[in-house]
Length: 79
Image (cartoon, rainbow, N blue to C red):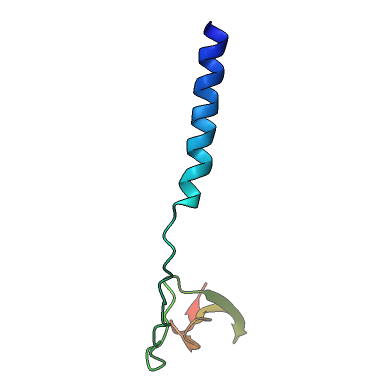
């Protein structure tokens, strides 16, 4: 008896799970692409930098270059 009830519940569950996708809406919604403004500049959250070294009059110096913005962030400093 328990086996019949379990089989019945299994069949009902399978029948409902296969029937639900068939009841999906037949209308399709047209989605139009949005316009992207090209005037805005994308700015990264993290700034990438590179440290440059040189020897000036026998003194080792360093300076930080911004790879993100393409400019020096610091002046030459002695080590």
